[in-house]
Length: 291
Ligand SMILES: C[S@@+](CC[C@H](N)C(=O)[O-])C[C@H]1O[C@@H](n2cnc3c(N)ncnc32)[C@H](O)[C@@H]1O
Image 1 (cartoon, rainbow, N blue to C red):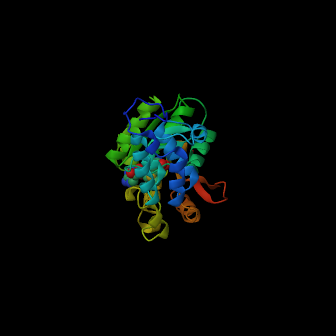
Image 2 (spheres, rainbow, N blue to C red):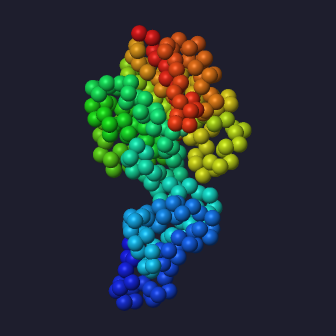
Image 3 (cartoon, rainbow, N blue to C red):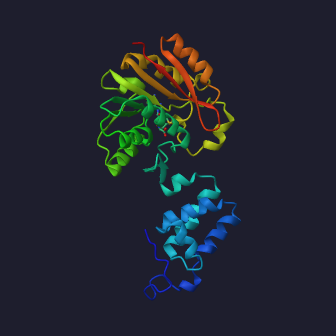
């Protein structure tokens, strides 16, 4: 990607640089469109290859024609409500730079709670862990980075999502993640897992929040039965795939914990409990297979 911010480029290579917008000019144009300064800086940084501190230092320098054209397009897309991560093609999760496309959910910081809890529950010794509905690979790759001795099976029903996860696995060089296609636990090659994790679709079809999520794949977001269909399907098949004492960890919406806990207890899971996020909402429920 071009990062020629110099006003002393090859003569004629990029036209008359005096006509080019400056870094500060592009940031002003973003503000005029109602785009947050941080989003504009991240976009410009991603497209120019310069760090955000450098953008400030080079504020009055002209931006080359290709970069400014790409920034213009990016600003248009941001102004139209497209998430920044789809425009830059990348999102950080658990400090890992992940490639994201419109085939995958943009990983959310909330999901790090699931990763944290799994790391706290299982020993730093060989373990078998499954991440159902892996999307970009966020959960599986974060665990793989932290625990090289674990074998992690990451599944998804979407072949396009699995392609993105495969790119991320390769870029991060995390060989202890196995990718498999298929429907929830049916995609797992075997049983005896120490933990099964999932951040499945859990938004109800009539939830008003969906209006703001129109750029992300519907199949990653929406579940029937008022958002419970996938949570309950996973719970219903996970016990047979866990070793005795193995853990099921599910992310869910902030109002879904009581009904999910009740269902898990009815299915025979033990030590069923929900964990709160930093905002105090119950967002992850854990349950254990009886020993
Ligand atoms: C909420 S997204 C989570 C993505 C990723 N784990 C994350 O936390 O960023 C749910 C994922 O489940 C996948 N999915 C939906 N239905 C599925 C099914 N029946 N079996 C397996 N995966 C499914 C979607 O393709 C999507 O990637």
